[in-house]
Image (cartoon, rainbow, N blue to C red):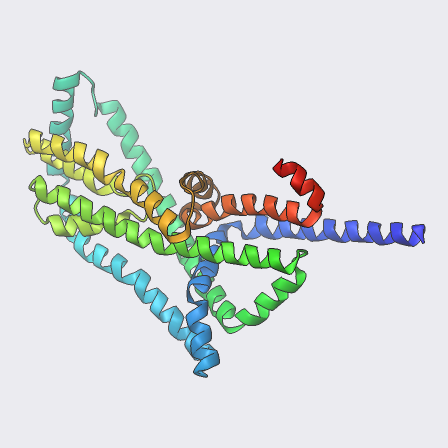
Length: 345
């Protein structure tokens, strides 16, 4: 009996090792598609309840309904991007067609900085270095665009099959996860809660940031302040430097045209208010929507952006929450009631 038990254990360990090896291989090879995979899971979690109501209760065709959901998702993603391109394209064309004027404005701005602080912002040497970096950035931008398109295809491809076969997939996962049913339910509830809190919170945060940016542009006399506020809100989707892509060039333009006080005021407002209102909103909103502790949000965003890129804004806090809840599940699964009481004491 001992030999049989040992052989079973050995087979179990070998099987687990093989599974882990294959998981590592798959993750390594599919890492480039990870944002699309996580995005598909996010959209599935957000739409599964409505999809099941339409297909199970109202008997809508699953495939047709899934295609309808994909079309609506694509529309929601495309509309702000389309209007941003339409609004900003004339400005980009103007910059391209008036490069001498732009360079003169940058030089004027650099001269003002030098006369005030003594720091040379744009010398011949660093201007050449910037030019080289821009030239090197263009191929990477093309590659990133191709990666984004590939991940979008992966996202909607996965979303379709998750919607059509979602019930079967959920039953299979419940069957293979080696935990008590109540702990599986805890993981599922935590996943749904965190994904909804973050996925619905991010667009709200962008709207708030765009509104505050538009208010700043209005107060400091920026022409077409509404358009610039909208574009700033769209670029707020991109973390860390998103809004700076808009307000920094505007500040440079105001300095180059001699509006020093206005430029300084807008720079301070954008740095202090526009640049930080998203963090304040994120902490308050996620705490209210999902009872998410602010520390989980902050640490999760830092970890998530490093691991997953933009989609890490959603899945980073989820990882931190998983870490905490898995510790609780481990105690619940493998610790006796006496040991739990001793830990509490």
